[in-house]
Amino acid sequence: MSIKAACAAMLLLPSAAPAQQAPAEDEPRFTVPDSVSPEARAILAPALAAQRQARPQRVNLGTDLLSIRAMAEQGAAERMAAVADRYRVVATPATLDGVPVLRVVPRDAARGKRLLIYVHGGGWATGSARSSFRTAAIFADATKLEVVSVDYGLAPEQDFRGVTGQVAAVYRALLAAGHDASRIGLFGDSAGGNIILGTTLRLRDEGQPLPAALVGLSPCTDLGAEGDTRRTLADADPVLDVPETLEAMRLAYAGEDAAAGMLHPWASPVRGDYRKPFPPTLIQGGTRELLLSDFVRQYQVMRGAGREAMLDLYEGMPHVFMSYLADTPEGRQAIATARDFLLARLAAD
Image (cartoon, rainbow, N blue to C red; front, side, top):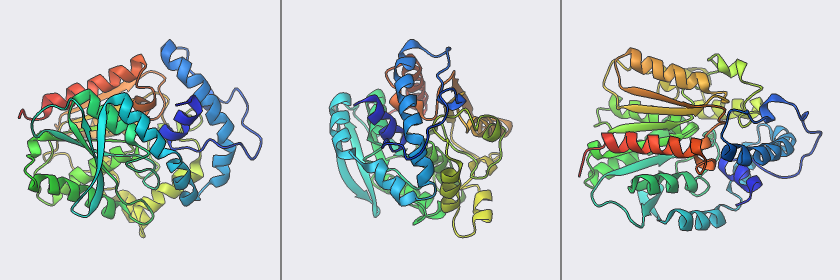
């Protein structure tokens, strides 16, 4: 896959020609820090140049979530075939309790009933199990466990209640099929990280057994606009760089009563009550992220309540770098840390 295609596919951003003048070359969000590895620099430099080229069109799209959604899916089938071969996995479409999923199984999968549930990102309004297949495949290969990738309904068609309900339904269906909660881990990137946290709070509220562990990859934990880095890194994040689009996405996910929705713990997990039981949680991210405060706040609220939480940050890394920089030192370390975190906490078969 080309750098430009990777940028479009992994970050779920379009890569068509610009429709207006591009930002200045020295704009902070389009620089690569000197402190990152040479391998990361070799990928980020052209990828961020492609971001710079595409940004005017993304600005023009603004709140047109359906067009952004369609562009994110372009070429997904072709990418899936290449990724499946690269990571030696087999993907099979299925339905669990009415929810479509992709069951991603390594060709050398470990025996037993341990498995992972993956919830993709894309701002709650874009993305699919197909366009996010690389992340599912990477984790399946790293852990040698089956990954069930949830193709949940998108906002605005589904708000946070509908989406967390669908992910919870998949989880309950796996329990009904004989998988024990102690052998199930959840992971998700960006909006998907938000969804796995919110879904777990919902499962707890509804009296369901909780999964063994969670991993949030650059998770948004506050649907509102609070957090120091929402302002201080607003001009430094090369990915989450169109405020109008981000606002439209969070309002769509919050639902009809957006003000109340943004305050609900299932939508803004940082507002959850962690004095009650909650699974061990790993939060990963980079220092070039608008959502850095979300990671810190989620970690602190959990640790302050006595829960097991780990905050794993990477110098100069942009949003959800773990997937498209998987072959760099930073990506390899992040994936290995997430793998070890999950495998150490899922009960043995």
